[in-house]
Image 1 (cartoon, rainbow, N blue to C red):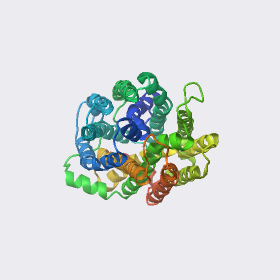
Image 2: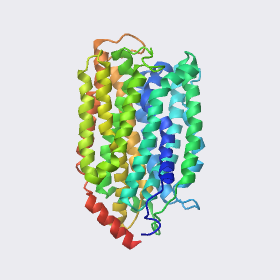
Image 3: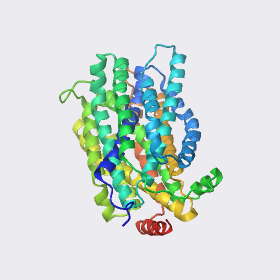
Image 4: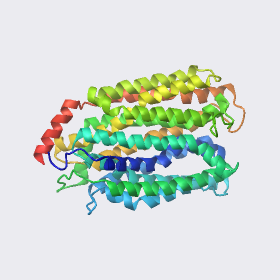
Length: 454
């Protein structure tokens, strides 16, 4: 056994995972609170916000693959991907904070400010998260070790998600003293500082171990290699549907509990209201599901697991349309079951992307790790933008008016956004995985043959 194929130490797996903790201090806030912040706090129209989320993806369509191409061609004493964890951390934290500064501008000025800061934040997110994700593809040549790293990554990510879901509402209320703009601004200042430090920890504790020969590299051949990678294409479409589902459901959560359940912010446990308790317990269940990843992977093929778990989560989400508004604890129970079922899926899918990098190298002789993960990240951001954009349009089409008693029609729209619509998207995500043709046996064969070539 070579030094590069021995099991990774706990310190390195945890250090890598803390990088996604850093990402989720913004990612989860955007999922859960950004649509609410822009409409109910910053005062933008829902349809305008939905348009912004979609229009700005034009920038991502260029920046994500460009960053992948740049990262694959980077050569430094720290490797190809790790340097970006060091260099891009401060811009990432700064622009994430700037989104929540809430300047006193006209309606047009506010919309321009939102476009500018959101776009700059997405560029900073690309600059740090494409290399961060690609790092998992070269941290070990072993698919099983990468799956373990992915599990650590998402335990850390969802732990941050739990902190966001549990503490953002009480923290912004405490720091703002009743002023939501001030509360969000100070909360995001704290999260920005923590994110910068955690990315630096990730840089210091990780190592790149796969070093393919990239001589004769050119953009055209790299793009041809990417688009001939059938398993990657299947994951790309699955990711778009999955993240559209995630964004729509997460973005509608605050609306669902505020307007349908009637959560007025009154604590039901210590300082936590109904929304915070629901999100907290659901995220705990999600972390529990992630912890089952390795156990499940030892018994089942990753592709079959992804399909079964995604369909199970879809069933749990669709059930919410039929739950009466006064059955809060039933909502908590079903929500926790659904997130426990979904828990292993993010770790599985990112490990599968790393397998796609192996497959591409095995098939073509070229390894385009960062380009593959940049495509994955674009699918993620496109799905999130489509989900958030559709949410804004759905609120508009169903007649939603912020901070008012909702009509029967607008209430139906909020309920559909939280249940049936995301469930349908989850089913479409599972259908896309059917076309992912890399079995466990094939992955092991590719590993052996690549090891021989190297």
